[in-house]
Length: 341
Image (cartoon, rainbow, N blue to C red; front, top):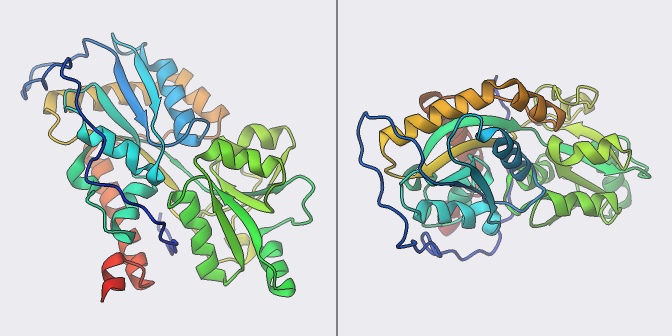
């Protein structure tokens, strides 16, 4: 499915050294030797979520953690490491030993797609991490407090034009996929929106429920509980088609706003140079998890589609999406190397 991508991101001030803060524990075993022999973990695995607790990636990690021991002899521990729009946690994994005991969840999100183009970072997601599989893709929903006067995003845009006042809109993470979509809408529509990034989906939803902002962007799993409880009204989804988890919510295109996005890609990755037998173990095990009826049920209930792709297909998908991001950002003249000239 073709995606119409236009991304506009306000560059945040960020200073992160190459793979900073990732010292290795000397007690950890050396990386397993490469080879065709079977590999299986001998101790618990750390699944690093580079975003705050309560967000869609964290919720995905908890769902995986719940099912994991059905298919692996060792437990999996979800560790949230937010910061730098997702870069901090990704860098931590990139700095870890490629021994199969530290993985990154959310590979392909905003920090991997756009930030290396928007800012001069010593971080290349293709060189720092090895893709293992795709698990899900999360759309971006636009919501408002229940007492809001607005019924569509088009209503908000029209209000800003009529009054000349900005509309405040909260996002989950600076330069993350939700933030990118909101900034893209500013560029696309000319709407006067003041974007307020937070440190994760949980915080942004709390602000929206408390009517601290006029609107907000989030992924379905982040808003579903509050939506079902009637504390949030959802007014649009930034996708080509309606999200299957919430088919009653119209797309922005249905509101006359010609905009859609990939959403947030939720892949799995490990440190670069992970042995092939370890990568194959995770590729195979996650395939089983994604086919597990209990996992599919949990994912459906929290509004996250299961969209498994193996290493090869996910790598190709990620590269294509990254190229589209890069092309769109360059067309807008927002790449850091264009700004230098």
